[in-house]
Length: 180
Image 1 (tube, helix red, strand yellow):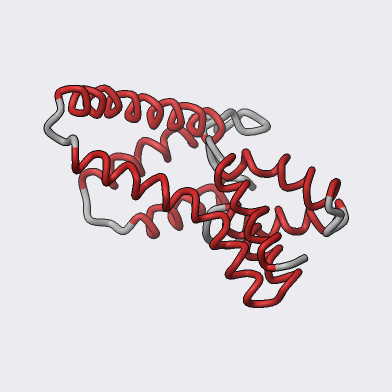
Image 2: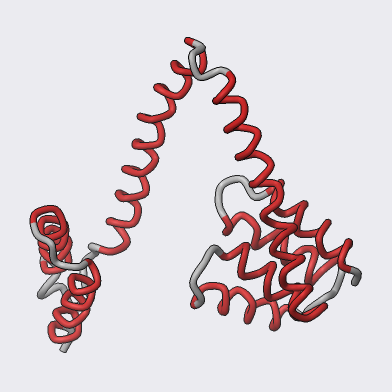
């Protein structure tokens, strides 16, 4: 694989990655395991697992890993640049457009309409994650405690200056002691 091929491959993923990095997984598998046979299914599973446990978006981690695997450090940089270039172009284009037309009634109206939609999507994500996080625990004897922990953390985060890291650690300790 050449640097240009690697760049083009991940540029394509950057263009098609609408909806988040997890949208990339089927495309990556089809190309990297199927069509191009760059890696086996088992190696791809390791790539996804590695991308899950390392900081950063899954797409960036996959681009860096694949590029490094194929062409070394330079390949990792090229793969990552390929994935990020479309987003950079879109953001720069949007900023230029908004600066030129910021006084337009249509632009202001569009942005005013997007804000509550974005808030609604965040609330939907909170609901979905909340249903996954605050569920009945097997055995059922302390099923109300996850909800209580969630409410306590929420209130402590809003009302105190306790670091979120301490809140997470404290929640983990409570869960560990109560699972016995």
